[in-house]
Length: 109
Length: 113
Image (cartoon, rainbow over all chains, first blue to last red; front, side):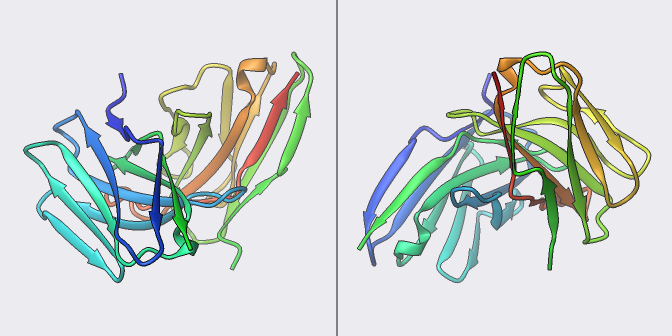
C-alpha cells in the first residue's frame, strides 16, 4: 500500500516553461512534506519542504503547494532549465520519511 | 565538505556471500538511515538509528543487520546475500529528528548473482 504516490513516471517540458510535478498521499497523519532531486549516480539532494500549517512555500524558482483536503502536493519550477533535468521524489513524514516512486523530469533546450 | 560518505560505490556478490556497507557522516548529525532504491519503487527504509546507541527497523529490514558504531558511522550488513537484495543502497543522516531533512550519500550499487 503506497502511502505516497507519484503517478507520472516522466515529464518533458521546454526550457523556460513551467514544470509541475505532482504527488498524492493517503495518510492524513503526515504533516511535513519534502521534495528531493536526484541526478544519475548521485544521492538525492534536498530541494524544498512544507509544513501542513502552510499551503505554499517558495524558494527561488521552486514553489511547493499543499492541498490538505485533497491530500495533494505539487512542485512548480519556473522557469525550467536544462540543469533541472533529474528525478524528483516527494517524501512525507517527520521521524521516518515515506518516499514516492519519483518523476523523471526532462527539460528540453 | 564530505557530508555523507558511502563505501564501496560498487559491489558484486555471489548468492550466500556476506558483506558490510559502510557509511560515515561528518555533519555531527544524531540520526542516520539506510534505504534501498529499486526501479519504480522509490526509496524504502531498511533500518534507522535515531541517535548513537539505538537502532530500529524500517519498512524492509529482513535479510539485513545494522550497527551504529559511533555518532559518525552506521554500517549495513548482509549476512547471506540473495538476488532479491540487488539494489542501490543509500545512507542518509539528519540533524533534526522532528523536521527531518535528510542528507544522502552517493549510494552503493550492489549486484547479487
